[in-house]
Image (cartoon, rainbow, N blue to C red):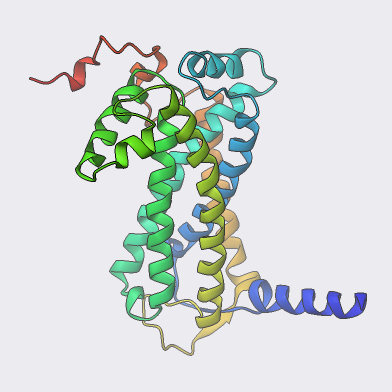
Length: 266
């Protein structure tokens, strides 16, 4: 029985990681898929560590983030990695989607494309919910603007935010949704990869090419180089305490009476 399980495990690894046929002509643009998947896994891990110390309450959320920075061992590291990798994930996902559109991959593997679009939509929802959780100035006003966009659907704002305006239940519900949706993203990614490996990758010279090579070792080194490059970017940001795409106003505590200057209506 154990031998049979080991044999099936070896065949699975061999078919999907070692002898998996890939077009010879694919270039670095195809590595963004590996970068995106690795980034999502990093987000799940650091998110779990941050969630253990976060308090989803409007009076305690901001101070729980400060607590993570100052009191939790490696808390600032988890926070910076979580914020920086979020930007990296969306950068790689945009490149990944653009590559598929440019090379016409959508015309060969319809199921893979639509699952990828579903992953992208859920990632945007997760990112929005996560942006609200630190409960800084930009978090509050960003939540106000985006939540008001949903008011065109009757009852949706009240159901999602727990009231007709941003309040205590809003943070709690956003935290729950932000914690649950990564489970769906993980499932979508599994199906995304399974469908891809069922049909094989497309290339910039077309899908129906017979000029293929094994994934290992010919293409593994490209993925490793891409992962190392992404790691260097993240380490550079984290070691200097930089979150490149964050706004400094979000380090301020929420004030419902003061609107950030760059979004004040003219």
